[in-house]
Image 1 (cartoon, rainbow, N blue to C red):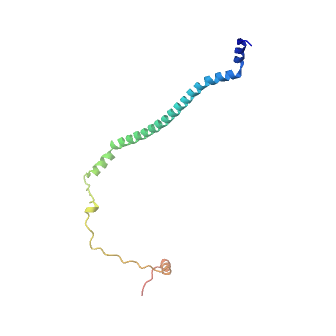
Image 2: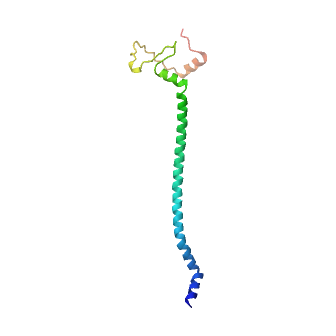
Image 3: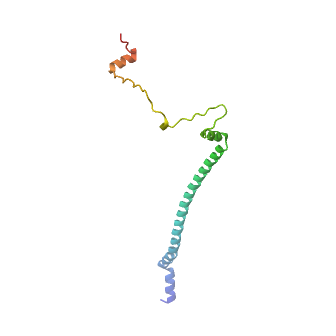
Length: 133
């Protein structure tokens, strides 16, 4: 067998082509794995940024509503009421704090009700309270 025939035999051998495929496939698979990891990272970042965008949109909506309220007459009236101001003809009443309220004196204790037996309660419910002669 000559060297040329050996070379042809190697080229026709399935083991040779399998080795060639493996040699070229390993770098491609490594690159594919790197790209998959990059895609996963980008997807996670995208989800986080989407959530942050939604939060910012909700905050913007709340701030716009607050701006509209602040520019309204209702806000001016609310602020004036909190400051103790009133309209002409109105009287401002400011309640005092509980700590500065005077102590309660001359308290009369209520009589403690005497529990009745169930029979008398049912009679009173249907026929009214008994009148003592």
